Length: 265
Length: 343
Image (cartoon, each protein chain N blue to C red):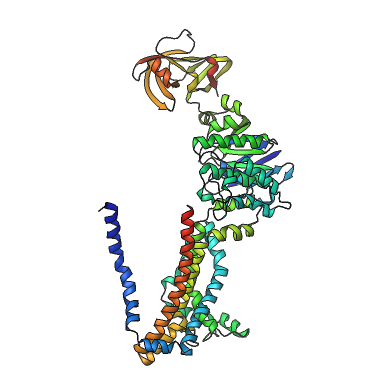
């Protein structure tokens, strides 16, 4: 056997431990689930409503993060300044702190007694136990996943390409939208997927801000606490099917694009 | 005319200091200097891509100092081409037309013909060779009809065959009336393409003059070293003689000069090496060949004279064989007083 093949097999065998570690519990969940209950819960409006709520609130929070986070990611990729490392560390804080703590922090910031929360209440928005509360919690935990991925995407775009474009008569916004954004698309797609996936799967922060209306992870916990494992598993299986489906579609789209790019090299 | 007055840039770790230049319309102006001298920064400043600490830039009488890059009508072509990888060759070339008042498609077709890009138009830039990418980059820059074309080492990343081809294109573009400022670190490119040249080292302008003047009469040691003058020696000048400091050698120089300490330089290609004593006794020294270093078709032959002068000469490989010059053996060196440059 060729030496490089042996090395590859060794690496694969070592790495397969982690792949199995991911797949084993998930496959077990599907194998051990009561499929009659899975099918019947698919018609349960509380279940479908919670899953749909998870999907769209995560999408809205990702949209807001993308709107504000893309310029921030570009700024971080293009500028070197004193305190940059500190700013990047602040952006990554939500990854490092426990999500229940994140939830408490967001709750304290947006509770009706806090200045921000009272401001929202004054304009007719309820930041606690509402869809807005879910979105605020999702945003807090998803920001680093989006900003980091998009910043890395912009790092991959040569500043010289942008500069050359400016000398051809394009203004900064024209270069940003026509050159920088399309060239950073891999990072942006990756950031969108990661941010959305983080939002959909968030429980700790969301449950602090809004136990009701329930998102899927809260409903799974609620069913587990009230009825036990047997009745929480069908909801978990459905959430996994929906999320993995969307995740796979998005990954395949971006992988297809990447393959196309590699063929051009 | 392009006029740069007192231009200064501060990048924290690097500074470009009070630089002034004038470039005539239709001129092929070269900017040379070693890596890190600030050449690319100068081009980017002219293009409006670097903030100035002070200075003024005028192009054809128009003050462009405070204009954004897109309003200057100054195109910049980078060494690494900076093509848009997500667009075809044709879209790259046409891209700048999106931002001009009267897009000239005819001009684009002319450029496609000039740079022989017809068969490449549908291709992605990443599938092209370096020479092809540089041709596309030039066509893209010229499509917007710039007043001034800035070239950042356009030949240095290319194979020798592509380099020659692209040099011809650049000469042709300049001949058609385009004013060009080209940055390079290769003085050979300056000699073959440029009208005038500015030499920059460490962010400071050392000399600006006609290419041949800079080559023959470098203003100081840094320029001399950059234009390939290798034998630089401290000396005392007295009339038409230079006595080399600390050595017993006397070197004859052209024209009588007042007494002073100076630096003399002799180009390696101006020194003759022979196995036997040459007929001329002026600037003729006996010594020993201490090293023979191949440089393509020539050898750098370093000779240590009896008076402890150490001079390097360029000798053709064929001459080296025919004259039977070997390392460690005795030989003679000789050079004309006209070849001795005094700084």
